[in-house]
Structure formats: structure tokens, C-alpha cells
Length: 139
Ligand code: ZN
Image 1: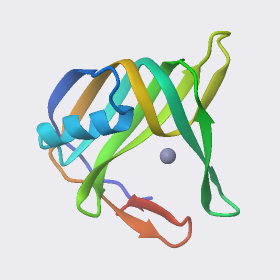
Image 2: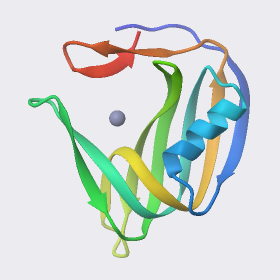
Image 3: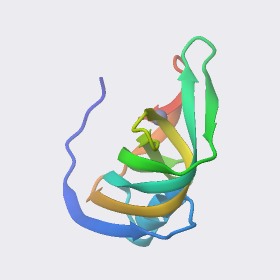
């Protein structure tokens, strides 16, 4: 386990723009407030979505695409540096018109409406390729 103390410097709430890309909007927020690291929660609705499932045997992400309106019943994630960009690692539980849920790593989704709470940390967080998992993990 790797751990460190972090100090929250500021918190923001934001409304995501209809028609924008969900995860990119969160990365834009982090960029605009110059966050070196952050943790966020969000909720709302999307017009479509692409979740990724990570196959631990193949060490590959497999996409699961949805071309229908879905509720974002819950979304949680964090922002850290991946190479020279802010990356919003985003997970979500989505639900359809029967309340059936789908969940996973949210790669992209088109915003219908979205509300985000972001807590920004003073200490930067960086990701680096990990040979065991073949994932970009925190240093
Ligand atoms: Zn993930």
C-alpha cells in the first residue's frame, strides 16, 4: 500500500453542460481551478455512455456501449496527472427506465444534466504505468 496525507484546499460545485462529454467536463473543471489532485462525486443523466470493464486475465479494457438515455445514479472519481494531462478516473452506476443498473469505469458519456462536487487537494497526484496490473496507478 502507498499512502500519504492530503490537505483539501478548496471545494467546488459545478453544473455540467448539456451535450458536452461527461468526463471531459470534469477534467475542464479541474484544469480551470488548477487542481493538482481532486476527488469528486457527481450525479445526473446522460444521453449515451461507454463503460469499460477491465479484464484482469487479459489486462485489457473492454467497452460496453449504451445508446440510450440513462440516469447517473452515482458517479465517483478522482483527478490526477497522467503524463502531462489531468485525468479524471471516473466510475459510475447508470440506470435505465426500469431501474436496471449498469456500472463500471466510465470512459465517456454525453451529458443531459450533471452536478458535480469536487474537493481539491494541495498535494499533486501522479499516475505511472504499473507492470503487474498493466494499469496507470498512483505513484
Ligand atoms: Zn477505473
